[in-house]
Amino acid sequence: MAINLLPQDLQKEHAQRDKKTLVVTVSVVLLLLFGALAGILFSYRVFSTRQLDEVTLKFNDVNKQVEKYRLTEGVLRAVKLKLEKLDDIFDTRYPYDRILQQIQAAATEKVEIIEVNVTDGNQMEVSGKAQALIDLADYLRFLEGSEEAYHNFELSKIAFDANDFRYSFVLDFEYLP
Image (cartoon, rainbow, N blue to C red; front, side, top):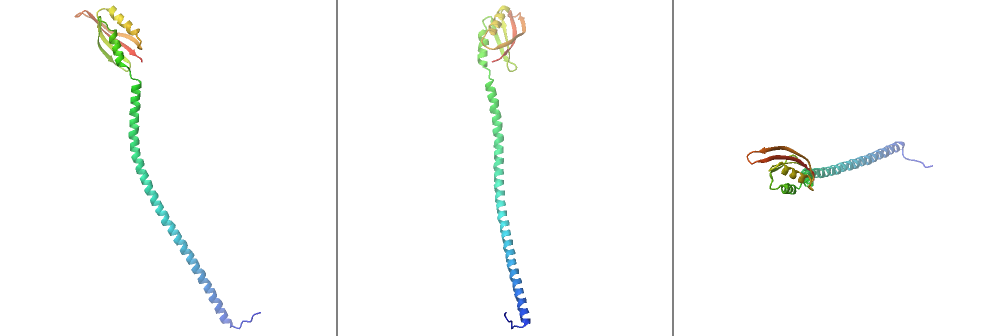
């Protein structure tokens, strides 16, 4: 056993000073830890804010590009629709030059073609004059027997013209290629 020769008051004072030193040391260490934690959190906040600003800038740039492409997309869609319409027109294009040549070729000196009209899509109207009804009948037979797809012939008007002694006629039919 060790014998302590220091007075009891000094021992108590020394013990209290040791406690105070320990409390001050622990307080300083905790204060440093909290300070470091606050610094880390502040740095993280600044870093996160910078990243958020960068991402926001990139997002805005991408939005501007999207708007620019959206306008281009609208123009491209309009062009595409026009091209599709043109394709439809060219796909259903009728060979009117060949049709008119054949209608004219079927005419003889006795049947004169005055006018040819395309009325509604595939509907055609031929007006002309014939010297006799038999000549008009021959003309109709020729058209019906041709290679072209003429259908639904209808003689919508026929009248005798006393001035030139010929029959005026209007022939309606359908052309289906």
